[in-house]
Length: 464
Image 1 (cartoon, rainbow, N blue to C red):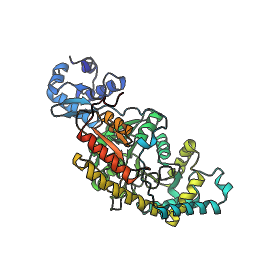
Image 2: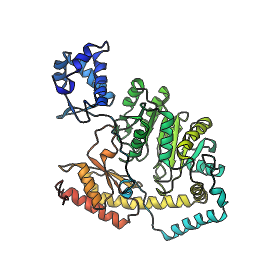
Image 3: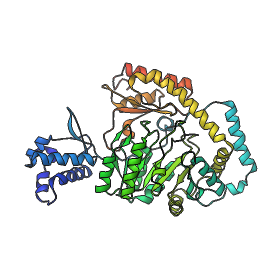
Image 4: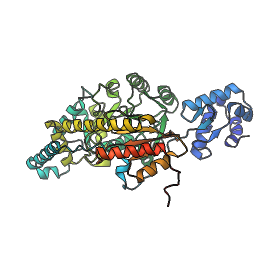
């Protein structure tokens, strides 16, 4: 009998559960116990039917069920193989952040910089300085919350200050939400490519991530519904606008379908809309508009103003849940910096935030044009007002080796494995064109990437 499934016949003989349901359970069990790993090849339908002395139809149903659960995948000419579960994201030091983190461009507009300096200086000159240095109630002052509600009303017309919390960055919000919604060992549904920070948070909290297959419209709704029926997820996390890393935006129809399933099964939605303020085009309505009673809407300033501006907003479904979340967030983050909050509130109120955002959009458009010029022939996936790109790779050079070499050359790329939650990353890299890099720096980096794709190096060519 085939080695990966050698013990299955005995297990099946001792169970009353139908074989087509028991086989996916055995695959999941072997993944947990380490007998199977991502990319392991499984027997063909005919081979497994012979091995287990089952009929072909039963085994076909079993593999179909396993595919619905996100456990296996099949490709013509390659056979059936294990997708696996989300790999743990190891904790690491903070070095090399600019090469791996997604940073917005830094417009070098003297008038804009002078405006930012003057506005921030005015905050410090006219504030109660000791008041800003004291502990405060979690969630920001009434003025901070009102400013946050006005900022969110661009996307959520019904956003109100009583349901809004001002928090120290989106990452902190996600930590608080996952710790509140899911206990260790419980499951949260995510896209098969997702924010690496979420993987790290889940690893730290012991929360399991269940990957939903992705297409150009967003996550697979049939897979989500099946997970709701069979796995009882405690939440679903999505990044619906300019998904990091692929830049896709979830379609209106897919958002409506996801909201419908989540409402029917009462599964809370964590809507991470970090990039939603970048596009000037009309976007589909947020999930928080489609399912307001179960959606936590999260956004911040790290992707539309600057990564060091650790200020974010979370809009809870109602006031009671906002207060409950405030307790969870206070336990993990104490509070957002009152000094940072004061500057952000001033910039929102006096229009500085909008001016910076528009300058960043202009930088993105210029960099997008360069990306199409240099990487268009290679199938780069990009949005004109987004500063990260998704580049499929092909050839003999592995994605990880390619990304590692490019980083040694000063190009900010990350291999797809960092984003994968199903153990089966595509052959692609995410490229960031933001941070302190100038337009000329981006041009050089993109030229280098194009040359590398034209003339791939031997995998060990850079080892001395």
